[in-house]
Length: 255
Image 1 (cartoon, rainbow, N blue to C red):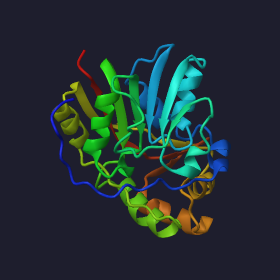
Image 2: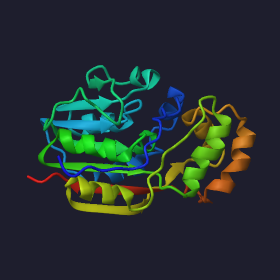
Image 3: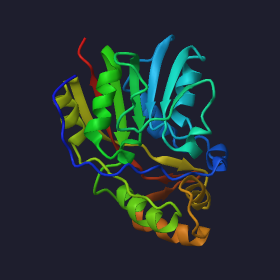
Image 4: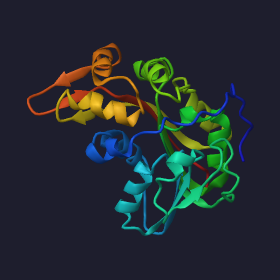
């Protein structure tokens, strides 16, 4: 493995437990962020693909679909409630995201992380584990909310105050994912900010989805009133666009 990385470790925090109905009713809202992440890597039949902090399997389900089931999905998810929602056909790993010790060295073709790094107590530990389990020449792609952004405020202020489980995201500073990857020994490291808007049929759908996705106990009126404090929302003739911006990092383990 590459050089040792030290960062300010915090306690791991589980994601909020969403209502399954939210993603069923609004299945395509988050496609931009997911498809942008998958655009960084090359997937092929027979691969073993790691999903770090898999939640309910939104990312893994798309990988499985794209490869017509000819893939081994390995899902790290320490939350029992979210782990229970994963497709039982996947290899489900009940390990911390800082140390997925059940996954052997050099066994993964592609490692992916869709907005799960901020639940890690140590970004260096999580990315170091990704480096360990990747095969030589294999790819890593992760994305997350940037520290200091309006989206980070939404999660660590509004969601924290209106979700029974709270929210204490350890968001990566701009450029920090790339810096850690370079120290670990990854090559071809790129980190960039991408606009990946969430698309809704109408404004009234937004608080409904947010309430379910983030497990909020606030009323729809309270959620709707707060939206403009955190997001840029644009209404067109046939859809409503919520501004969503994430930091993406892609790297490759040396062959």
